[in-house]
Length: 585
View 1 (spheres, rainbow, N blue to C red):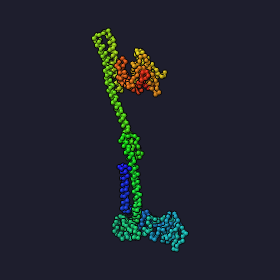
View 2 (tube, rainbow, N blue to C red; view 1 turned 180 degrees about the vertical axis):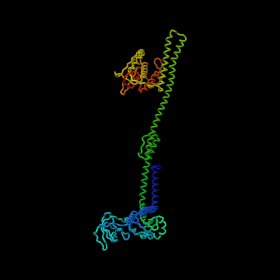
View 3 (cartoon, helix red, strand yellow; view 1 turned 135 degrees about the horizontal axis):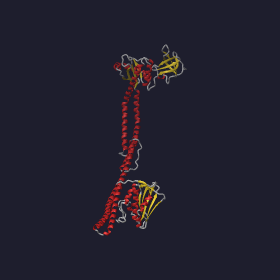
View 4 (spheres, rainbow, N blue to C red; view 1 turned 90 degrees about the horizontal axis):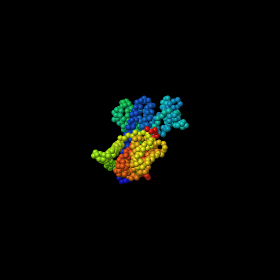
């Protein structure tokens, strides 16, 4: 255990706390257990006496039921009890008896409390058992038998002067064997009653108010203390009866003494167990805390590797799962921040590149418009001055040509701006792609002848290939790609257009021309506006630089995959369109 660790702190605090509580319990046990037991015992007896009083009022005139109620109360509450008349004289009610059915008569054998020992009382009998009693009948009808001896059979010799009764037990109430001799305690009732009667006058007012009078009496022979409780059975009436209850307090004293000795021997074992259990408890409680502390330390170092999970349903398990979720969220957030940072850097580079392109755009527009405007102005001034009237038609044609060139540039710029603000919508139809390419290719007949070029259109199947696309926009794409191929193709070469059907349900078109390759750094920039790989401003061979940028936007709207690559012969442009078989629309 670390010196300042949570395990040591928990161990010390837990051990001290348990030892303190244990000491308090032992101290309270020694000082207050005896008193608590007495109070608890007396409270229980008072409650039982209250219930007895209610039952007594219902059967007051029935001597048998009263005897049965009194015996049941004594056995259930471990007391010796007597019913007193208004003069505090003990009423002749015998609580113990056995009823025997002998032939055609029911005989009651009352068991006297005086002179009877616990060994002479029948033990282990039950209703329906056979019982033999030797005794003396006390009435003329021979229904009450004073028992002398109880037998289980009638083989024992009968003493002179006694009668023997044999029959079946129908009902009984016998003193139960408790921690003391019940018959001996019952015999002490008269002694305790005489001593209590001597001071009864001082308690008379409380008894008539319905209160229970409590006192203690000590057996002079055994030294055992008894709790004595007296209560009125008739609500305090002057000619009513009283209930006298005597309960031994000896068990609690013995229990306290034995408990004290037991604690003396058990204390070292308890101390060792406290220390051992405190150590185990501290480690069990602190283990998830240590795990969480290590996880938090890793999080502080931005280490978001797999965190150990505490698989419990308490607060530690919930905190562990929350920390794992926090780790995952932080890891995800940092990755997103890194991606965002990379994206931001890319955006900055893109912005710088866009700024450069903007500058090039201004320069290109200035160049593209300045040259034709200069030509137009020169020819217009010549015509205005009347110079070379014989060349008037030629000058006018050149002015118109340059005007068309400027108009084409402006139209391309407007077209491009529509794509950039997402203002262009497609009108897709199904049409044969090969027919479209052939129609566009026919418009380049003059350019092909001037450079002695040939164009070869081929597809991998004889069956016509249909695509689902905006026909006018795809025509614009093909026109730009073929124009670019013708412009950069070497003389006396072949421009090939391959139309291929791919397995993923798309049609791929490849336009390849023979000529010088494009620098690797320029391949991805060819799709940018006003970007020309040759860098020259030759107006005869160079375009405006907007064609491929428009092509890129059109193909992206179609979800097409487009590429430009260097081949063995020259440069190849390719794009894909979704195949759709159907009639020409």
